[in-house]
Length: 139
Image (tube, rainbow, N blue to C red; front, side, top):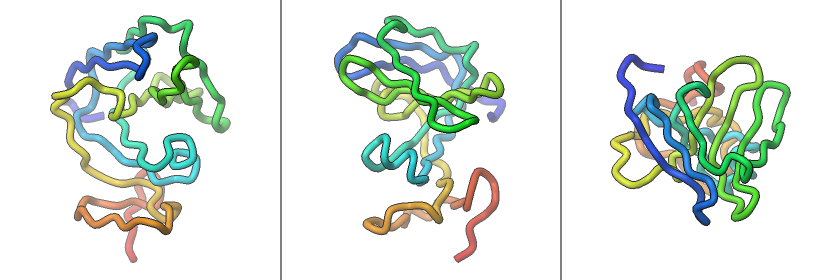
């Protein structure tokens, strides 16, 4: 996470879950892996933060799905809105950009897991692309 952070608030579609993070990295990353695409229906842009920096109202309405040995994903059990990705190994957490309230001031800066992207779209915005988290993609 960069040294510059921003406070953001957001929540699910039905309003049963609201959250506030006092420190998210303003550099959004879009993941193109099959897990993220299947869960979200396409794009999965996230803002990184720490679990300790996030407060959740209506936490009883968040269902956590263990997606892999290293992470779980949180969504509203009432409306199904996808809200969080959380590491099971440390305090790392990501908030889905689409759930953040308007005027967040965040900006998409890179793409990860581009070798796993769907064949129905191209990544043509000129932003850096990576094979995984930090290995540059070279076509």
